[in-house]
Length: 472
Image 1 (tube, rainbow, N blue to C red):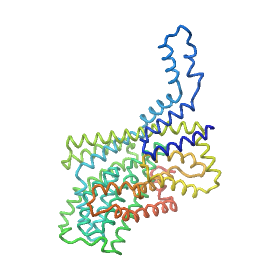
Image 2: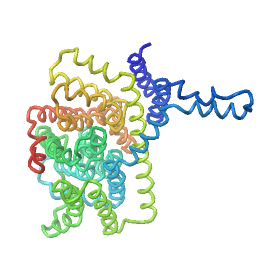
Image 3: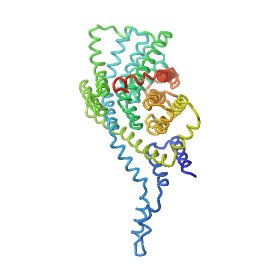
Image 4: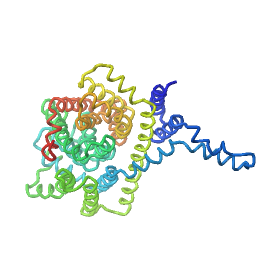
């Protein structure tokens, strides 16, 4: 078997092991070291000291020399170097800080106040409760970036209220599931940080480029919610005075100032400091983490138990991301050394396809990978396979990254492995069945594809803000 064939075997075996349920990070490391041991095999280096032993050598000398020779393989040097590279990556430093901000905000008891305020403020809009739930999801998802937390918390808070207001269960479920995924696209997004670390694209340009496509997607969601409420009033009945009471304007302003403004200010402060060059993403993340603590203190929700939970969850998630990077770097280095990247590049270039066809093929593969895999695994493991091919087709990695970020919304919304649906089903009332949730998700899934088409046809949606802030 030639080295390129061995590389393809390595990739195929990894995919099989993933579907069998093996831990992905450790599978990557194990396969990288295992295949790398063969790839970097050098008997003249490994067994030099062992072969120099003479008859006077003891059994211990023979065993220790053999063991030293066994470990004297460049794959172990590569593993150590790649681990150090990941752990010292300045871009990834922002990940734990943004995660900590999200977990603290999640525990600040702000979401119930925000939803109640927006529900009252939008009561005259068709589908007002759905609009309020969607905007709350978008803000909360942007602040936390943790899909499971947003969908679960909004499912506990908004779903019972919408069902009590006689909303169609599928419609209500779709709103919460779709809104909860927006945090992986709209800055400050942890997913974009991970893509920047994997691709080498500037994170500030990614943040600027993702802002308008994110707002486009939110706008499409809102248009669908309001439009369906007008066309099918039974799916989202107008609220009664008992459900949403009339309150004085002054009291409503106080409610908005106390619930909406602090969270919006925190998001804008973090994002604005990055976009206007006032702080690096890591520094802005530190500001956000401090702001999250102050927000929790302001709402009298910061306890030692909640602080400890936030730190623990931050460390656990950060460790997962870092070890995924370590495994991916080792796996990719061995895969490339064996000639895997070259054979894939030659295969794709031999297909004689256009840049549009390549983009469609790449996005289709990422869409399919979203069924069994998390977004972090797709970005860290599989997206780097496409990155070397972008230059071949003249595609900007920034533009490609935004399309991927839009596409990865579908990884949480596509049955049968739509994780948002399972998060919601876990806390939904018994009458809300999984089939209801899947049916409600489908129109929002279509909106994601529409947003991708709009971004492709109007690339200025991606490039406008980066060019305004940072030039070409």
